[in-house]
Amino acid sequence: MTQPEPILKLSDICKSFGSIKVLHSVDFELRKGEIHALAGENGAGKSTLMNIIGGVLAPTSGEIMLKGKPISIASPLEAQDNGIALVHQEIALCPDVSVAENVMMSTIGRSRSIFVNHGEIRKEAAQTLGKLTTISPDARLGSLSISNQQLVEISRALALDCEILILDEPTAALTQSEAESLFVLLRQLRDQGVAIIYISHRMSEIYKLCDRITVLRDGRHISTDRVADVTPDEVVHKLVGRRLEALYPPKSATADGPVLMQVARLSDAAMVHDVSFSLRRGEVMGLAGLIGSGRSELLQLICGLRARSSGTVTLADGTDFAPRSYSNAVAKGVVCLSEDRKMNGVFLDLSIAQNISSMRISQVSNRYGFVSQRKENDQAMVLGRRLNIKAASVLQNVSELSGGNQQKVAIARLLSIAPRIIFLDEPTRGIDVGAKAEIHQLLRQLADDGIGILVVSSELSEVLGLCDRVLVLSEGRQAGMLAGPDLTEDNLVRLAAGAAQKETSSNEAIHG
Image (cartoon, rainbow, N blue to C red):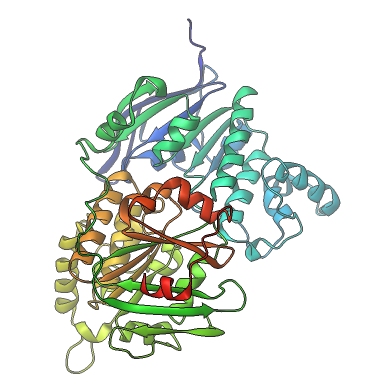
């Protein structure tokens, strides 16, 4: 069968930033009416290649052909004029205006009139949004959750009526049901002839959705295959250049140690209602549930980042744990990693060493209270080696690192104070399979060292593969605790959806 001519063809694309070459003679082609997965570890060159197609960056050398004709894409506006829409992983919207204005931003920007027809803008935005979500076009963008903002970002691209749609980790912040709705829409667009480039670290999504897959590694084209012709293990091998024998380390035989923290009937009267559980020494415990189930809010309640209305938290020594601020929690050896890495996890404009020391400056200060750069650098080098942070030096700015290495810096910050309990909210969101495996190994090592770890994750495979026990929340209430043979995907999904509530007594939840 003769294959159609590619709508987009990149040949011998190279890109350098100064003396650093990030793309090495990369070839890539996209056919009309296909969903083409682009896979690679962080730093493989995926975003650079997509930014070249989207007009954000210019290639150092190479040729781009669009519909059989050579083209130079000098700006994002030129990309849009040529039917190319790029949805970045990092949300780039205007928080202080309406959803409708964000969705129709390109139309508003191109209008030659000094007046905006808000009624027409709202009508067109509502039609575009309706393909994907029930979000009100009148809502202020900044009032929405991260997942809903991601849906608005995708809707903005759809409003361009593009021929080529590029999506970079579009489901990273979406619920399962939202992701499924997106998949239905993408299949419809494909059937209408739209060409889609789909960047994802999630193998299940690639195999559920995509027709072909191209793998990049270290800025080089490794392979392009029909998804049906290659196994997930083969793809992972191509991604990392080695076999990952196990993405998840063996679970601990000592995860039933003494209780480090006991939570009893904790509530905030809004998102969390009467939740009880215990966290044990040496275990990795999971916290699962749909987005909006109260997972992140529960962590915030415990750590003093959210006001509680009732309930108690007790530490291993029997003392009450009721921090008035996060700094109080840190002083007690309880630390928390936010799901929003760039906003709350790291300081992008500071060096690796400055980020790691920022958790407790006194540890790297001299007797006069000034920061000792030697102490700061030594601390960063020790933790950097432990977490295998890949960087030119500890003086490199965190903004220059890949997502996986930024996440490792964020975790190194937590470890700098030698915590007793670590809470992690979506610790591997948006990072590649190799970095995920390293973080999973690290968390298990920390648990084996006696630290209690509580992990929030939207990836069922991560919850099932990593955690010893899993507390499932549904609509802010505990739906059940799963462990051992009961810790299955079916049980977890049923509990999270509220379809099979397991009535767990407070005593069972606290001592179980």
